[in-house]
Amino acid sequence: MNIYDLPRLPLPEEQTDTLAAGGRVRVERIVSSGQVSGWFDQDETEFVALLMGDAVIEYENGESVALTKGDTLLLKPRERHRVSYTSSEPPCIWLCVFF
Image (cartoon, rainbow, N blue to C red):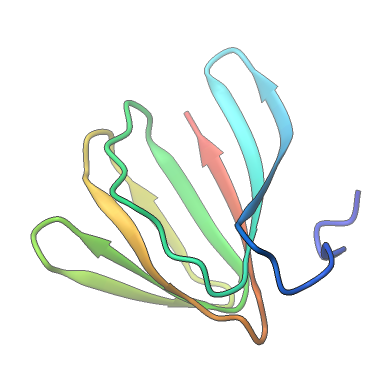
């Protein structure tokens, strides 16, 4: 798989592909094109790298982080957050490592 091979756009919903998983580690590629999310309250730590596009992560306390191509973010367990914006042109390609 080439991480930059995109599905047919626009997407009706985000596409998530598990690239590798074992033990307590999972690596996913997520492609989004304008979608936003509900609130996440995860048991896992999540390392996020935005490989393409622009996005905004919003925290429950009202703070937000704008991400652009190449930016990374570490989300701690139980750190409530949501994706409040993703660009559609270009689409977002996320590389997410859960551990």
